[in-house]
Image (cartoon, rainbow, N blue to C red; front, side, top):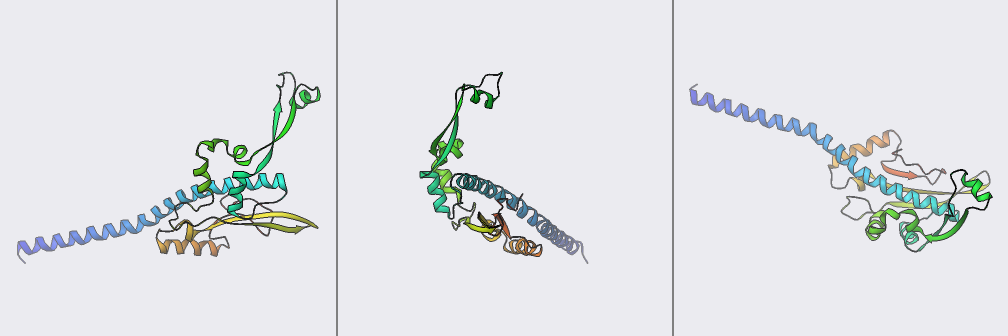
Length: 212
């Protein structure tokens, strides 16, 4: 074997080693990048879920029921009103709020205010953008929306309001590695969990999310 042949073989072996190293690195980093992006997407969705829950809880407090559809929820924020309690007067440092009310120094008055203004005053400047995104699945290019329903269940002879909102991993992780998405779904089902992000329940009077 001459010197030139030996160099060609060595160069070939180095090239193979480099390719193998890159393939190993990719196989290691692909799940890491997947989990990182999944976490980023989930964080955005969870915040929208929390905002939806905030609306639902205030609607239940005011009207005794939850909102059943995304369109109705958005319309409620745009056009609906909720009771808003405002303190009239100033409580002296020497008294508690209840004592000041009892003495007639201050009073609580209930007003009807626009639901969005009461619940999301920090978003008044970007109201339309906020509302346009609230029920949308983030990062989903197909324009999928958060699935939601509401109703009542019977508990001890009473009709108890319930609601549920959910987004599947397929919709949340749309466009990412398909096999890793399949793995996420399979893992969730193995542990009898909803394969995605879910909040509330149509069978139990809870409002917690499965991320909590």
